Length: 335
Image (cartoon, rainbow, N blue to C red; front, top):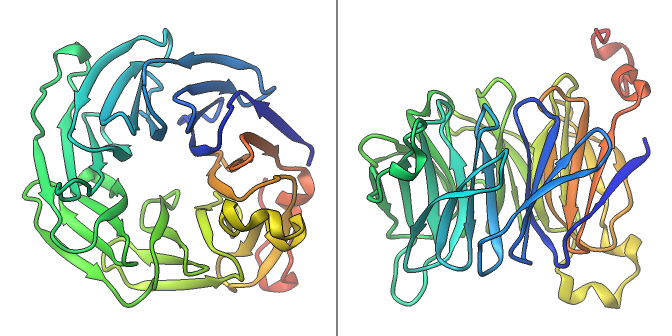
């Protein structure tokens, strides 16, 4: 499994996402630039220039027509994927730390930072797909959070609900129409939730946290289903389609890294068996903590972006699809 190494950022990666077909990868970093790459050979397709601060989050719609980004310059921008044009900019009072598309591509959500007396706010905006610059400036929903600030959020399937992860470790669920909190789980994570990604079928999701664990939750009830306990703070986690694995990434904070060897720093992607909660393998390569992980929508590859400014795209070998680490307990693989 030889990686394709993407060198297009001068500073650390913040978020990477595949498009729905898996042929493009979008990478956001602290150097104000968003890059688009071909995943098959690592060629850079283009850049999206226009932000004036670290780009914290990036999201691509299901048709690969539009891209949305959130940055430290207090704006969220909508881009045309094919041309790199910025079509629309929404401005806020504080930094935009997370963005996401709804399932029908008709709206986007963003989280703004809690700072300068401003509360942490989750907003959703309608996107006029026929004429994006004419999209409304006013949010269609505004959820002002009184307790712990939200760090990550995404739309649940059918976009009826918004799932959120918080600084306190709380995982919550809000009604996407009324903005009311309809469920929460405060007993699982003990530290800030750093990432949240849906399963391929949308019935459960995985979260990673600085409390050194990743957890699977049921979308409907927010019940905790599985726990993967590691020995390092986690920054990202994703669920591999086709195979019963979850992929976790992290490493101690960059400020402590120089005092230890790279092995002690734990800069590997870890593969855990989703059901048996056992670690089954690791992939080395990065020189800094892994900040963000993404998996190919068809489960053929995964990509990791780290503090070292590199993105590594790994295409899985046949052995990955045929492996049965738990022998006869696992069904035969259909490829």
